[in-house]
Length: 358
Image: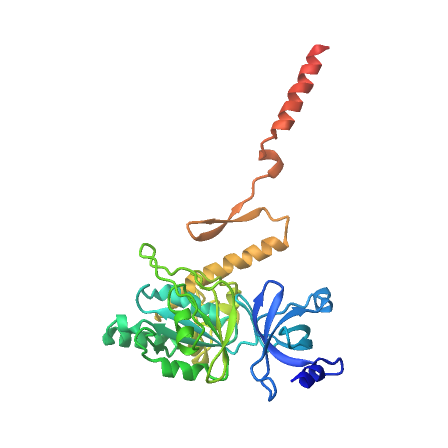
């Protein structure tokens, strides 16, 4: 073993390859590719100064080169980040293959509008999108069938599971093999419980659902990759209740499978159709999520207008949000309506007093 350490730590040794599985402050936990001498080894690494100078960020999921490994202390240094196949900014993770949205059928109850919002956000990443519905033991078979029919009309084939009862976990495990999968969804729906079941010995903290708000408490604080026994990596991400939909109005219809299905069988009269009130539109019609589409389109228009306003500082409009709705209002003339400071008022009084002395 001593001879092996000397050989691997010599300057002539080629860089080791690995995957960043966790980021802890300025340190990176890197799981090295399995090889005969040290299978499954992970090192706590720093980032070389050169990477910091060129602004190279290191993300969970990055494929990296490690140099100067210290096997005794399990340390190393990241010398290079290999090109990424995919990249997400929220959650920050590289090289993911698919997003698996996890929702609960009950406790908290499944909200179609909220689910639709998450699906659109997931579709906008360009990754494969899967849907897993937990706590199936809390609803009837008839209710499951109703949701299955409904979601198939949306364009999705959900997996019904119950971590508590151990139902449906084999089909779920099959979907995760040999892929880097990002678990995403609301807090309290069972993402951490799924990982605890599939990856033995992890023992992630699991939160309960608030009785007042019907929402889960955040238990995951950062992104981390867990190695699956059957092959593949699984990323647990912090839950959140309102994902942003920062896309352009032109892109939005492409994130609805129902709209895409209609566009494959027909064409709108206008190539730049937003599928709202344009004549001879093939997308507009009687499908369940069309009202969701209109709401999200309005939000996309508001965001686009905000970006245009940011690009034009001379604009006389500003974005205001009230009761969850965003709209633009005229700006007040800053100098005309600004109240003078107390110091300015005191100076004016002092000047006036000095003038009366003469």
